[in-house]
Length: 214
Image 1 (cartoon, rainbow, N blue to C red):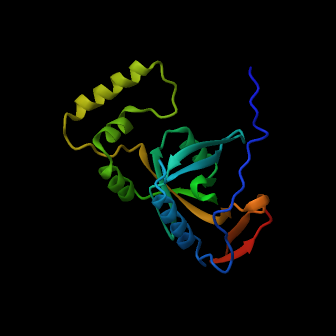
Image 2: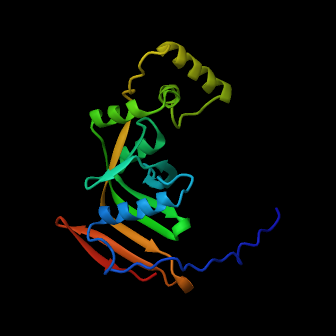
């Protein structure tokens, strides 16, 4: 295999700074401020984040999913409840989220507990999805072994014929999770790797803010 020269790939960060004097006192407000700035930079997937879970054997796993909402209750995404990520959340509700926003030299790390959203909330979001995405949710046994691409396409066509232009309901096996955070860290790249890291930790209902070494 050809050797890749990765050792010399370096970038010095210098766009912004982050301090306790300028950060919002509420991590959800601060996250919203940063997310607005990131969306304004026109990235391809502004709501993408890395979700990390732990399975029954104690092994971690990660995948990129899309944030579909957040407020003072937590961060929401949707998935198939029979998927690997859902099975791992059933085993261990403590999860982690990582947002990487390279255009602004920023990261946000979230640690918390995942809980299912109410059925009404899942159905309300599902109703907003494009028709093909709704059909795809019904056609996919997410994370299960698949014989071939053609088998998936055949299943999709079967589902399409079944509903035949009618309203497509939200499957019982599909819905949302809300990650309720106990810790939120905001990371801002700085020169010479002396990055700014401000951490919010929840203690008895109050968010405590402190700085971390880079």
